[in-house]
Amino acid sequence: MQPAQPEPQNRQALNTKKHLAMKKKNIDFESGCWTDRRKHSALSLMETFFQFHDPAAAKNRLYEMMEYAQNPKVLMKDNPSVIFHLYLSLRSFVRAGYCLQFKSKKWAIHAPAEQVPHLLLGSLSKEEYKDPFLVFQKAFSEFKIRDFDHFLAEIVYFSLGSFNNVPEGNIVTPFIHLNKMLDAAQLILERRKRKKNEVPVVASSNQPPDSLFAPS
Image (tube, rainbow, N blue to C red; front, side, top):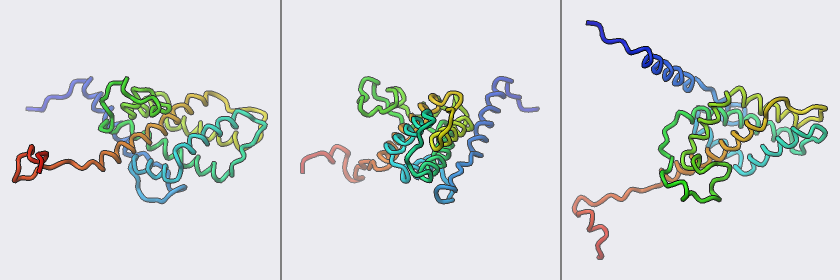
């Protein structure tokens, strides 16, 4: 007796999952040009990124690159090597972000939306603050990795030179997504670190749990 074949719809879902798993597995972070050549996970790559780039400074420089790219007559004053290093780092960051969209949501919080402190949101919505993985899912449902590569190449190119024209196409939306990804990645890493540092209270085998809190 032959085993039952999956229904066409289920077969398509299985093929989609396999395809996504293959794409996730085969992503090259391309980090060897700006950091060590060891193999990184998505989260370890992001940790390395923030070791090289202070989060606030990286966001500020990204904003400045956008400003100068749209002002063709003014050159960015930063050392070009610094901009190029950030460009290479952000390319790797985007690839790690692509992989994060498939990650577990174990660092999401489940407090009601109205309890989220406004000052902690940064560029994130309350929903994204609670579940920062949504940021990566939204970004890569709208743009592919190559779209972010093109965006980064354009703003670096136009911010470092004096031209008679400005970048073509939409550079604002990729900028907003990347800005959000920087905030979301920092949030995930903070929650991951906090979770690792939590020390569970283990009751002694010789005493009932309540006796741990009894006065001596």
